Length: 124
Image 1 (tube, rainbow, N blue to C red):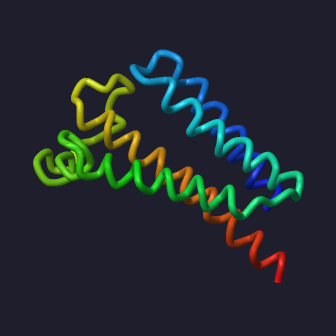
Image 2: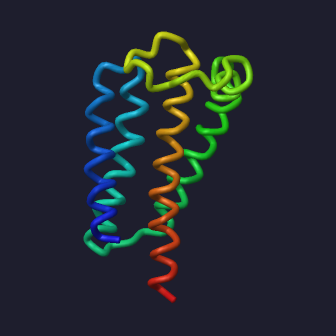
């Protein structure tokens, strides 16, 4: 778990750094940095289950919004036949950016969920 958490922490810091030229870095930098801090703390064997749940709740609500938003994941999947999202790094179509953001939230939820369940198992 320690190695995975340090890898996730570094990955989230990298993700946050890549947001500097995004149209909404003030949203995405805190999202990724929150996950990075919690993974760093988990790496140091400091677990905060309530913080994990709070992050998961916020990210899940935002992910549901991204899924059903106009030009969101649902549109990408149903109207655009799950077009390749990694063809180019430039988001030339609105559903590409929305879908990438959805999967970024999914990665954050998975990391926080993993640490939440590990902390509960450790406590028991």
